[in-house]
Image 1 (spheres, one colour):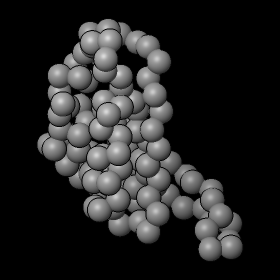
Image 2 (cartoon, one colour):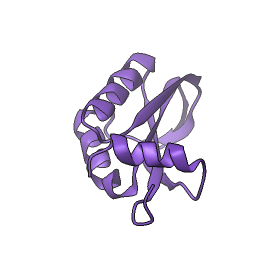
Image 3 (cartoon, one colour):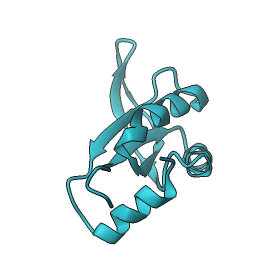
Image 4 (cartoon, helix red, strand yellow):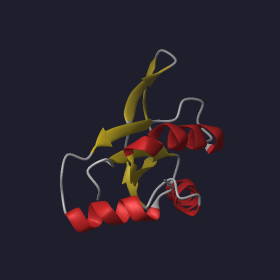
Length: 109
């Protein structure tokens, strides 16, 4: 990874594993993410429209260039079935240089 490029993990929730997988495949196909991991069986507890709710979701974690966070977020918002999808970026502070370089190589410049 070059010194001018940084990477981020993007945490996204989806209604179920199929929705998360479809979104992950689309992000990788569009080169907005180098990789997407789906974790099924997450239980969110949240306040929505004045009520505390509990549901079932899947988590999608995408690895991307930090410079693509805005474009990735817009892509997810256009395709997600939630009114207010969770899309948050966490900067990667360090790690395996070869893996970080791979993220850079597999995403659009």
